[in-house]
Image (cartoon, rainbow, N blue to C red; front, side, top):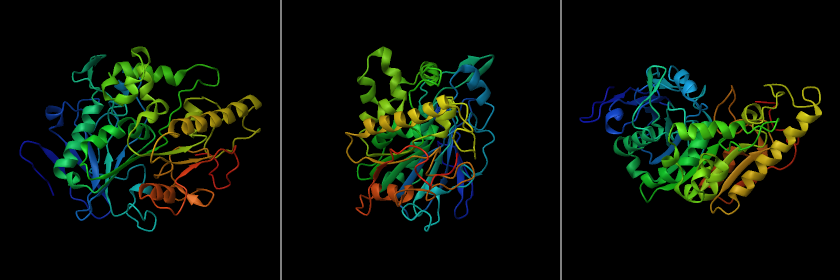
Length: 391
């Protein structure tokens, strides 16, 4: 079925049960100055349940483009352009975990409307430039914040979200960071009566030097912060707490989370595999291979354990004074635990004690007393026998 709305041209495809179908916001470049990196329109995928007033909003993950050159390269891919987005999505291989329609696998959220927000700006929806930047003769658009606005406005106007009773904002990896950065802003757009909370998955990227002491991730995010003019899109409470030379910190979760007013849930691996490879740059982390003395040197093993302690410590510090907070921080070498990723469904795959992330998130969102909704595992790897080897 094709839907045409006067004044706002949309492309909407027929869906079958369980599919998430594309809604491309073709007028958004005009109405919202919203564009993917290459200038194509933003959009989202939705599995609409017309009898449901609950919504899971999921920010797609997919890393960042920290420089103009990286942005140019990214603009030719599905993470920088919507030109080749398919009519339906399988999310990260399967729309599973918290996006699953299977009530047995996802008892709390299967019947809700599921929204997969397409990620094509490379900056965790923080870019605020309304005019393009010329990069080697190609015009690029850094307008991720406007993309987010276009999606939210469309959901409110045309997908019933203006009458939502429950909304859970989520995201994985770069989308997990987006969840923390925009939790309060998204909440400000929703109806006052909605039970609104936010859960970031693998989005607590640590401001930490690499194994050689070089602050690579800080330098990358600082450059992107300036290149995309991210400041206006960031948490206002965080921004107000730093002087101008330090406001870049608010693009990191550890500095933003203490200022979030929305009830949040932190899902993270104590030994996040992406962070070990790309922030710590450990050099001995490989999928399917254990971390031990046969694969890593003594210095690498020490840095590995120290990073886990730092990540856990920073999470505990960031959330300690927040009301309504929840957490599932497992002592696993893992990146993303609430969605299908790297060939695995992780939603109910491993536990802290006897609790899975699926149960813990549900207990937290619905304020159930059946279990502990703040689980931060502080034992050293490999203390949790439930964990996968490395994912």
